[in-house]
Image (cartoon, rainbow, N blue to C red; front, side, top):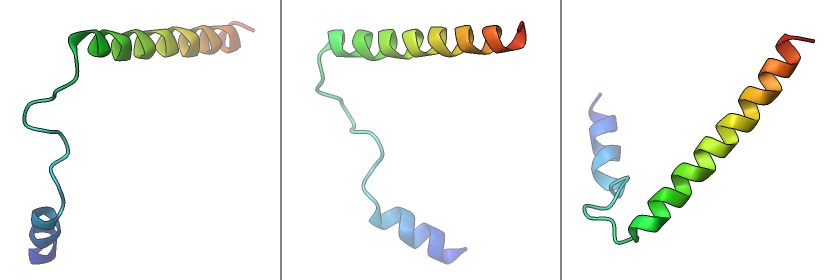
Length: 50
């Protein structure tokens, strides 16, 4: 298991310590996620009830 700790130490961190993106961009990501979830749920329900 020593190799995994070596690999983890060499990789950059997954998220920056303090993200510098504006707050509206977070809302945009949330909106895109909710819209895609709505689309997928619609497809799933359509297939489920047909």
